[in-house]
Length: 592
Image (cartoon, rainbow, N blue to C red):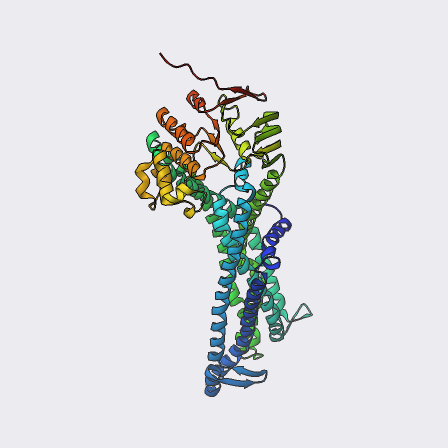
């Protein structure tokens, strides 16, 4: 964990935009001002109740029935002024408390909504989410479990930030409000010939200082442990999600035992870290529990000599104890909030590192390659150097020109960089340099098409809106790609990533291409999971339904070349830079 200065700067950077520059800033400031006003009014009512308690206990000591009733239900004139009855104060106090909590929750959810939109927009823009996955450091600091950071950390950040900041403000105001009361009530004491005025204020200060120092000494490791706990919890949850998403593959491999070992190991990390938190929390609770228990009786013990000497009445003793408790409690805010502060610091660290990772990914996106839409309809690479995230060069200074109407099959050995070339042609690969000009109306079909959650209609039309195509069009393309059995299930909401086999998912990729009707179709091993007959049917469907589309296919199977005019070979030896060689496709000789 970093020092307190950088941490507070990170907390301010996360907080500032919503209240100072966002489109909701005036509503946010208004809500915050109302909450602060209510909290300060509650502190003021606590001051009123302090004097009310003095008069109430004095009426009990003096057996003054009239004063007792007045202080309960009406009002009573006292030397310090008019005191309202307890019922009136209680009604106002309860109302203010209820609405301060309500407005606090309203501000919290509005702030969380704004932050969530901001983080999601930044994470999704410029494909930062994708580039982060490519550049994650080995320890994954700042990039692990982005789902948790957006869903949970933002929720906890808004909650803890409001709770701690308002708590600190209320305690500061309470301190200044009650320190004068305690000063006037405590009188003075003479020690070693030195008269100390307002001695109970100094006692409260010393008591709080000792408690704060001991609490920090004992609780300091909690911040690191809380940070780690959030990470191991998210890792365990992610492992469970992976099992759910890959149930069939695990079953086919009979990998239940291995998955069980992995899950138990990840959960063991949760348990080990939690036990460390338990041990540290036990020590901290022992300290704070002792501190709170002693604080309850300590002021009465200190003030008792004056009471027994007749210098103050019972009400004065009660008010002194209450004022001491308020002053000591305000000074001990750090002690009482240490656990929450530790969690809040861990949350700020996680959000700040995640945000820095997003900004770094966006910066890398705007450097290196110069991807843009082609103005002449050709696909062009000019002086392109293509590297891996670790700096290994796959291509250097490569030039390539592909023209419409001439389909190309890209071949090469595994590991040569064909898929990386596919990503470069798509304009999403961030590592390298050079000019990439992509034809308009291009469509990319990866080896494993993304299958979103929702109805089959949504799955087929992705990423276009559901209403972009008619049911007849969708049914037709399903039949064209060999998925006709699903025509009557367009509105079924199922777990399609699991329900559809890998071969069916690849057929789905071709269906999307047929719906999109692009001018260029780029396919990366798009038929690797279907049989040769199905492969031929899928390519024939593209040729028949989209005769003017130019195909660029990355493939290992020689049979794919038959559907293309030219061959682009990516040749690269291990540890060396590759080369691109273009040639015509030579038809295979017909069999006897």
